[in-house]
Image (cartoon, rainbow, N blue to C red):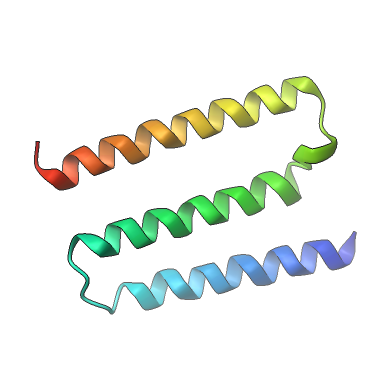
Length: 85
């Protein structure tokens, strides 16, 4: 269990470093795309490791699905805002 938490922490720190590093690379709209992908990866780590989604009850799976749906809404709204529609 401890090893899994250490790997999750290392993964989150690596993704944090990628987020900070990507802010210094001028990619235009690509920066937002990269940062949204990194945020999705961070959310997946938190869901899998800290919420113990694999061994969870059905209510936990429902909550995780609601979070995923909410993230999808936020990503779509961000994409619309970036396009300037």
